[in-house]
Length: 260
Image (spheres, rainbow, N blue to C red):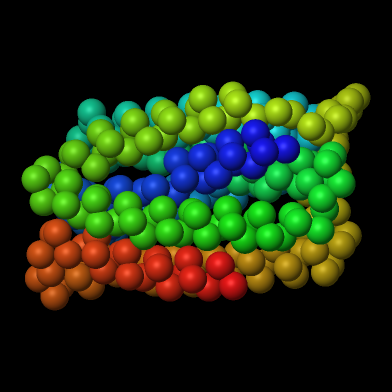
């Protein structure tokens, strides 16, 4: 059990230790992109993530949580490598598709594997405690990373992406260290099964559908605020090194909330 918990901690750390988030709008601007281009890129990321959300959950059940996590982190690594060595809108678009797909494969699979682990060792009552700790680690990691990302960006806007690619790569061995505990389902017709799940989630089960819609609205609202932080700081002529510090303060408030 400890091996899986520790590996999941490392996976969360790798996922959320985001050096590029506090300065990514500056990076886009430095490569000639406007705010409209920024939101197009992030919309493509979101569409890729949302479109694959239900199929990826199904894939985690029949293919395995561990395999989904491994593939997800390989895509993360590829996405940040693409950002590190390219300079065009098209290349950034491809990177966002890789990152959005990777995010979807990781999302849910990590929590599902954590739950499988607590069930296997008859510690289900500890699931929410571990989930809260992992969430807290993620938010504090993003907060701390903000400072380093801002300092690196003060020297070069490329440096945070180089370092981010290395951090993304560290999630791959952590995913390999996981022990798969779920009994994989065998489905005769995968496409029909995915369509059945989508129909059940969005049509048949009204309560589940409303919860999904509510989650999407809240997520969109909070992300909209997050993406306007950097343009606002740029409007206020904030020094680049302060971007990470301000981002850190914002994320610390989330981390403290997650702890309790």
